[in-house]
Amino acid sequence: MENIIKGKAYVLGDNIDTDQIIPAEHLVYSTSDPEELKKYGHFALSSVPIDKAGLPSGNKPFIVDDNYESGYSVIIGGSNFGCGSSREHAPLALQVAGVKIIVAESYARIFYRNSVDGGFLVPFEGNEKLNDKIKTDDEVEVDLTNNEIKNITSGIAYNLRPLGSVYEIVKSGGLFNYARENKMI
Amino acid sequence: MGMTITEKILAKASGKSKVIPGESVWLDVDVLMTHDVCGPPTIAIWKKEFGDQAKVWDKQKLVIFPDHYIFTKNVHANRNVDVLRQFAQEYDLPNYYDVGTERYKGVCHLALAEEGFNVPGTVLFGTDSHTCTSGAFGMFATGVGNTDAAFILGTGKIWEKIPESMKFTFNGKMPEFLTAKDLILQILGDITTDGATYRAMEFEGEAISGMNIFERMTLTNMAIEGGGMNGIIGVDEVTRRYLKDIGVTEFSEFNSDNDAVYHSQYNYDVSELKPMVAKPHSPDKRDTVRNVEGTKLTKCYIGSCTGGKITDFKYAAKILLGQKVNVTTFVVPASTQVAKQLDEETISGISLKEIFINAGCVIAESSCAACLGGPSDTIGRSVEGDVVISTTNRNFPGRMGSKSSQVYLASPLTVAASAITGKITDPREYL
Image (cartoon, rainbow over all chains, first blue to last red; front, side, top):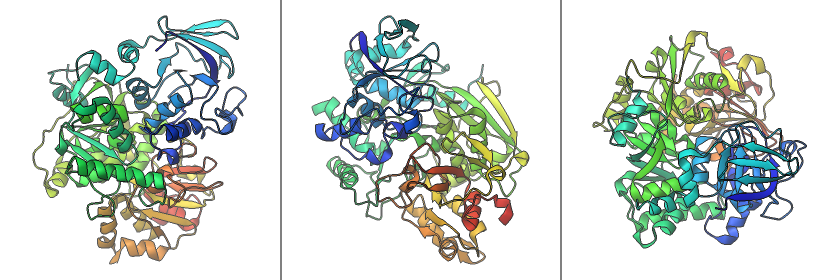
């Protein structure tokens, strides 16, 4: 994982549940077949109501047309991001679509674990609510070592909460790498 | 300083005499459960990560229930069941319950109970957020993703952060128009969908003691809707009797100490509570049924791990006896055992199944069905413009199918009463 991640922000509201991230009807595709995997990227965030897709204006689809990759690599969420089901397809779908980092106010437990243990993306928590300060399409830069997100468009930087005990797993790139590095498996 | 029941079970599973909320521990897992949606990716990760060394840590402790997308022509969904079947054959797994055979059970959370995998004092992980249902048996049970499950599959171990506990006490005797579903919707309105994130939700009190095991499972089932890591209810005579009937006789009982420390405590008098709904689009958008009475419906749905147990159908049948539904109403028994019980259980000499057929309900085969939408040919799936009242657990946008449909969550009594009028109706009108 790089220490500095730069990209365009995609902003969402509170309680973005796993059905909005990847609707259950699409969970049938293989996660190991490279072609089928693209479907997860294509349908990522497809059940977010359109008026809430890409805040503050809404009406900004995360995925355009037939693409499976989004132009957005950083998601700015509200509270309880990833609530609902245990489907690991949720952080996987976001990763396939090109998301590397989420900065939210808080996360649901299973989504948080899945993001970290599966090595899909880094779930940072903000020290303050950021989805009303950063706008969709703003250029942002996240510094993993200094726990900071900078809005390049506005020039304002915000502190993030340190990842704490899961940092080691994030750094290893997931639970299996972490366990191998620590001779647990 | 004492410990809660959850802390005691996790201390035992981590080989410690005491654990403190917030500390991370490695747990020995007693049972790993998976199904057709998350099983195949779990197996794929396990094979990739362990490679030639891939070994199922304990075949007796792995339980696989195909249950989510069963009665569908979707080729990808059917392929997922094939993956499970091949895996079970290749590794000679004793606890695989195949579709199309007499072993097929239906929804995993109820099947775990029926098949005796819910054992007090043990630790159960499952690749499904509603795995917390099993906590009704005085055990620790929670959901995980595929990577965590693959790790457990190979090692029998997983890390977990010890949760703080929240205590919910229900005093008084349940009025006949109230069910466990109303109680959990009451709680969710009070704490919201992240009020219990990373915490244990412990339920107790006179009203809980008076509940049968299936009603208790409705409470622990929806702990995840408050963000809870687990829901839990201590063992008592009700639990012991159920376990004895299905042949589970050896287990450890844990109880919270009187001086255990809680994050927070909530007290309710059930005689003051009313039938509740959760309005679209969140399980915490609580309101009384009275306040939304008259809302016109296009579908009613009685089913799922939350509201498709035999007790749920007894409630619904009590209301539907001798009545006709005014709107398409789906009856989806969670398990094949429940489907059988619909034939056996009677009210006034008429079987529940007959009551539902006479009322004009559509009875479907046991599976998760439209609770989570499913492939486009799933029975009961919501379509654009639908207004549904359902005994299921979630009403996020698109959960039951179309993201433009509106879903109200309610008790089986309320759903049955609403089915008769075609509008949201308080069950007290029919009791």
